Length: 545
Ligand code: VG1
Ligand code: CO
Image (cartoon, rainbow, N blue to C red; front, side, top):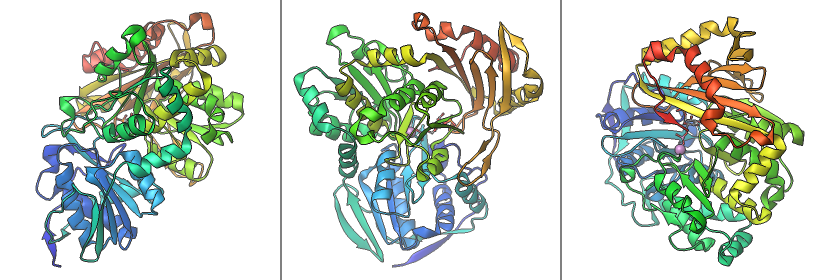
């Protein structure tokens, strides 16, 4: 088979962000753009040669075209065995599991996660390493450095491959296998959770679910797991056929974008008693009860407090971790349990070493991400199953479980305000302005809240001692309130400022406030400190979650 050597020149913008390289589809369609980045990956991930590669994506526009290119390049680079999800589909957690199960050298996931899809939307590439987790920063930095020196890339001269039928065939020295994207992952879920118990409760009619796959990759997974293996009522999974443009929607599981789900859960006594939605690539989830939202930070805390009740976690937890912006609700639980709670930068890659070193069992992020040591990615369906399993054990509703948790540990009112589409240099200046105030803020009082500490978060990995700096400005107050500012690393246009707001309330008589009302002081302090009005001329955030 002929291997073509194609000349190219570097693109200066191939630096991966929080989670892979994300750009507009149009950028990825630029001649040589995708190939250059892939060549950089193959240059760095030398273990792929002679090894197994897992390949799939969230089904968005350009997914299958990119897969054809990757196959040609992977064959040219001597990968011995490639497992591709049928129709090019694989969720991010499924890729993580497949890498681990088949001892693959790595995986390529085609997704821009929660970003919209379609010809005018976004596309992305993530590389996961042999532990199943997102490649570490030192790997992605290396890939970026390589991308700046690309002069040629290699492509095997082969026809496009049909991705529609399961089976396997040989392409030169490479075995290509088109696999069922769901079964291995569904089997893993069945090993972790008590499917018999959940199934019985579905059958009794006491439990019902509405799962919104948001026209993205989790549809086939949810159909198999909730409807086929757990016998949830027909129609329990909505928007379950993956579409290239996600039905024109935004596959971000929050109260704003998962509107149909929220409406179904608010239909009074006939509503399903548990609702959930997932994002484009299936690694995130939102969980709601009837007329009741559980914020993801609370989800992590509730899981931590109750994990020992589930047979899959009955031995207890070695420790837990949360990303910096995630509320400190889980810290309270860890303290009570006497286990370590780690605070990491944003992005799942920072949990990898802690999981591999068995320092933690559960971890989570405020951005609707939760997971455990079963894989090395956040996992939306796993989290929903965790809740279903918990509901069957406790015989309580989502709301009752959450309220009991607050009564025991106190409530962390929490919200994230996103200011999108800011001019990048204005956003950088705003962050610099905050950085300059770090030294002097301590001891200052704003609306009765005194700053106890303030820093630009820096993380030293306790396992490999690598240091990651400038991960967000955090301002801690004496009364356990907190504000964190950081810029998003997943956008494709301008800059997004994320402002994370938190207030602790121990008194259960005060656990029923509206979140935005409860956080009013923090909201105005944050706006004042960041000089949002003068710098950006923004009165209100674009998205509040
Ligand atoms: C966002 C979230 C972060 C998450 C990341 C990738 O990053 O805040 O918690 O890990 O997306 O998730 P940022 O840099 O935009 O804040 V996914 O589901 O897009 O892989
Ligand atoms: Co995602």
